[in-house]
Every structure is written in C-alpha cells, then in structure tokens.
Length: 371
Ligand SMILES: NC(=O)c1ccc[n+]([C@@H]2O[C@H](COP(=O)([O-])OP(=O)(O)OC[C@H]3O[C@@H](n4cnc5c(N)ncnc54)[C@H](O)[C@@H]3O)[C@@H](O)[C@H]2O)c1
Ligand SMILES: [Zn+2]
Image (tube, rainbow, N blue to C red; front, side, top):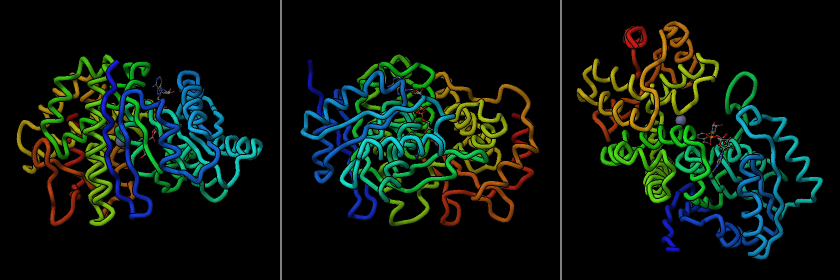
C-alpha cells in the first residue's frame, strides 16, 4: 500500500471562515482527525447522508470520528434529488433533536451533492447554525458542490430556492470513493471539470479528454489528479470573488443555455449533460459573434464526447420556451440574457470589465433553432 500525499487547497471566505480542502486516497479514515483539527469545540458529530452512500461509507466515517474521540451517529435519508426538499430537512432536524444533538454538535455532509446541500442546510439552521464538514463522494460533489459554501433544498417552483451560505470548516475528499460511483455519475461530474479547464486551463481540459478511459473507469490516480486541479480552480475563483466581486460568474459558462435545456426537459436531462450541451452551444454562439476563436466549440465537443457526454440536443429545441427560461433568469439585463463566452479554450472573454456578455434574443434564437 502506498500512502499518497495529501493535497491541501485553501479557500478564502473572509478570514475567520477560511477553510481547507484536503484530498487524499484513504481520506475517509482521516475524517475523524480532520474533524477534531478543524472544529475542536464540536463534541459530537451527526453524519448526514443518503441511504446509498450510508450503506457504503457511513460506518467507516462514523468509526473514524469515534476513533478520534468524538461520538458520532449516521442519519440517512432516501437517495435522489427528489429528496433534497424541506420535508427531508424537517425529518433530519427532528431526528437530530430527538438524538439530543446540542449546540456543541456538528454535521458531516457525506455523499453526493444532494447529501452535501441538504446536510449543509441542516447545519446552517440547526440550533441557529452548527459547523459542517463536507465529505463529497461523487465527482460532482468533489469538484463542485462541496466547495463554495452554498447549501439548500429544492422547492416545487424551482431548484435550490431555499438555502443558506454556510461554508464548511473542512472538506475531506477521498478519491477512492469514485470506484463505487456509477459510470454515468462519473461522466456527469466530468462536465463541470471540463468547464474548469475551458475557463482557465486549456491543458487541463485536453488532459480530461486524454484520460477519459481512466476517469470513466473509476481509476483512483486519475480521479486524484482531476479533483486536485478542479478544486484548485473552483477554490481560486470563489476565493478571489470574495474580494473582486463577479469572478464567480465565470463558473456559469455553459449554464445559461444548459439551464434552459434542463428546465425545458422538466429536469429529465441531467445537469451535467445539459451543461455539456450548453458549453458547446455557447462556444458556437461565441464563434458566430466573432468573440470566440474558431474551432473552440469543436475542440470542446471532442473532449466532452470522449467522456460520454452529449454535445447536442437529441431533438428540435422549443426555441421560444428556451428563450423564456433564459429571460426569466435573475442575471438578465434589459431583457437580454447574459452568457459567459470563451475567448478561446482556457480563457474567458472580458466584456467591458464584466465576465459575461448580454446577448440579443435574435442571436440566441438563431443558435437554438439550428441546434
Ligand atoms: N452547492 C453547490 O454549489 C452545488 C453545485 C453543484 C451541484 N449542486 C447540487 O448537487 C446535486 C447533484 O449532486 P450529485 O450529482 O452528486 O447527486 P447525488 O448526491 O444524488 O449523487 C448521485 C447518485 O450517486 C450516489 N453516490 C454518491 N456517491 C457515491 C459513491 N461514491 N458510490 C456510489 N454511489 C454514490 C448517490 O447516492 C446518488 O444516487 C444537485 O442537487 C445540485 O443542485 C450543488
Ligand atoms: Zn453546474
């Protein structure tokens, strides 16, 4: 057994709430040590996870925390986005109260983005807020949702509409957990990782394409490398955003069109697939407007195809419906949707000091009807 070195990526919030993302194979067994180190005042931990992840890793995490001298219990809820709702929040918080978790308690969000968002929101609200530690086990959660502090639940009229900003005290990533992650879920997470490459690091984006077989197959070394670079990119963007507001918007690349396609499908199109198509279409739009280097959309599409993500809608797009969703977005200016454009692979276009550009409806209509 080779003990791999731990990669530590710092995330700046506001000084007092800065935290570290610790990435290492076998990291699940170090959750207890991290818990005591990051939140020494927490006397007892509640591990909140969905039942799938609970069955796989709940006991191991609980034992790691108990081994570090703190009692811990596992609280599970049914897996799936359909359970990232207020009812589950109510149920879990009731169970924490019944178990006697006090103000000196803490929450571990163990699992994919659903578990992390729900556990984070439980922690943000329980006893007016207790510390949360994030232990992501899906690629989506490792490269995206566990970093940045956004927590919350879905409501009938929309996703993530009720929530709180509650940065974790520590994020512990064990890339070995990707071994049990279904292949389609690995691919979903790779969409956001390709996005990280597309906005700041072309070599990284190309490497994902080259390492596709390993990444999709659950190879731990490849996962380690992926998570380390993606966390670096996301941490850098959200950290710098604390000072120069707006940089976070670059993470929206592929999402203006992607969100519209996702909503149009009534959320049957998974988020990663929607963003994958969105990135290619937004790059193509940028090329047609003369803002994005020719060939960028094709290069992105080749990478995304190699990681088994879709790069075009499966059928004709309801153009007016899609435009409706884009114009309902909160980022719209003068009724013109805002899109993050690439100057080329690895670089975002700056438009008059802004990371996104307002786009005429006609241009979007043209793009979507030809898609
Ligand atoms: N807070 C943020 O900034 C942010 C960012 C991106 C996404 N999100 C949220 O994340 C959610 C999507 O996350 P997700 O794709 O991880 O979904 P998820 O949590 O539902 O996980 C996907 C599936 O994989 C299973 N799973 C997770 N890890 C596993 C493992 N190691 N082995 C076997 N099975 C495993 C889960 O049980 C689930 O069935 C959405 O709700 C989205 O809104 C939040
Ligand atoms: Zn996304």
